[in-house]
Amino acid sequence: MPDVVCNLCGFSSYRVVYDTLKTSSAPEKCHYKITGHDPNELVRVVACRHCGLSFLNPRQDSSKVIESYVSMADESYIAEEVGRRSAARMILSRLKRWKSSGKILDIGCATGFFLDEAKKQGWDVYGVECSDWAVRYAHEKLGLSQVVKGTLKDAGFSSGFFDVIIMTDVIEHLVDPKLTLCEIRQLLRPNGILCCTTPDIDSLISRMLRAKWWGIKQAHLYYFNKRTLNKMFVATGFSVVKMESHARTFSLGYWFSNFSAYKPSMRFLLGFLKRYSRWASFLIKLDLGDQLLVFVRRSRKMEYLHELEASLDKGMVLEKKKVVVVLPAYNAEKTLAITLNDISRDVVDEVLLVDDASKDNTAELGRQLGINVVRHEQNKGYGGNQKTCYREALKMGADVVVMVHPDYQYDPTAISQLIEPILKERADAVFGSRMMKGGALEGGMPIWKYNANILLTAVENVVLGIYLTEYHSGFRAYSRKYLTHVNFEANSDGFVFDTQIIVQGVLKFMRFEEIPIRTRYFDEASSISVWPSILYGLNILGTLIKFFLYKLGWRFKQFL
Image 1 (cartoon, one colour):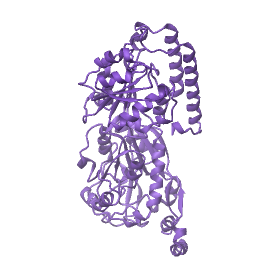
Image 2 (cartoon, helix red, strand yellow; image 1 turned 90 degrees about the vertical axis):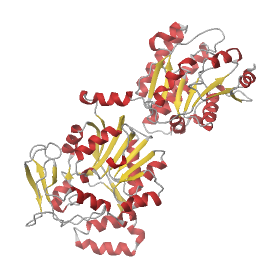
Image 3 (cartoon, one colour; image 1 turned 60 degrees about the vertical axis):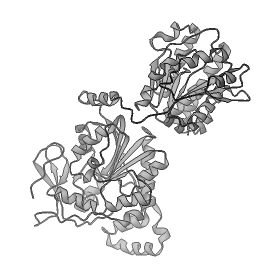
């Protein structure tokens, strides 16, 4: 069989690392099983003299490799379902540092245990798998209809479709890992994350067992260490954000079954465990230091910027989204009609007014003007009003919820600009900022309120680690995803609700954008006076302290 050139650098010169082929001129036919390993497999592993990447040479023809995956069936894999689900939850927990929701793709998803765990946590799940047996199990047993049979190219996913892509123990199987990673980069959103696990050929246990190490098998075409894996990601347009050792979770019986292949004396204990299934099924989480877990994101090097900008500017609305405007109202009779007149029905599907026990005819006027009205019999406060607004808008099937104060202080004609980043799936929340382009002072905001706003915003940016020009605008839009993933019902009924819901979004890794808006200050417009403003500022500082303590490990119900 012809020599294989290095997939990373294209170099054809190599040194032999392990050679068990002896007189054989080619490896035996690969009968692949996920859990299968024969310490005496006939392989030859070489390392590129230029970049150091290790790989099988020679190896089976690519078509035969894929055929072995298509025909693969492995009941032993299902027997370890509990441990595999535990490992999946661990990876999803680590992933929350960067992403906690969105569209997730598992490449080589096998029977779909990982996807099923992700689905339980609210992810929109997709999978790709070659094995007929595994795909059938995912469809029929777990109801994972969005698992595609075939290769990544067969699936035909659109560019920039996924927030997260997972490859657990897959990259070492790929015929052309470099090309596949380039394809993956195109499928990820600009801020998307790729998670990859793979055996580490430079680990201590690998060096000790040499060619008998369980990471060496005919189905593994490539063998990475930390250095070559990093090189592969850099070469394909990724930046590594975290690389660490990865623990595996299996039953005691499974561990002993694998270890007995190296130590025959352990077969006695294996036989004992088979007689006592309760002990055999006991889960053991073990980090042998020979498995790498890597999180990477799309590189922002100059050569890739055009791809990132193209993803941001593609302007594709994948489907029609229902836009509901909510009006949290209290004594807004004088300004309600003029506010509604500026809301374009070409952009907005429905308008909902929530009257917070007004003393005037706000609710009656709303009904006369033909909008949906909910009235509180008792005043619930600004935050309590918003809770009803969002709860009822979600019941109405809203995909995007826009909050507009009905006192005409904010300009409703800007709704189309406000919701655009959400419609284009660039953001989960968009705020109209009075502080951008001098809109606040020009609109008549008192100078003391302007300065207080700037000071509070600066503190919030430092503590939360994001950058917004204003946290206190009453003109904002949220996606359905945002409102269903944060516990806004646990927030205050007061004015600090606006800050608390942002903090919740930060902890859920939501994406924020702002647009500049003009605002109006006039006698009929609602406004908070000096003393309530001071209390509001103190409540914000209290929320930031809770956020800081939460990051240190404290638990608060509203942030879960």
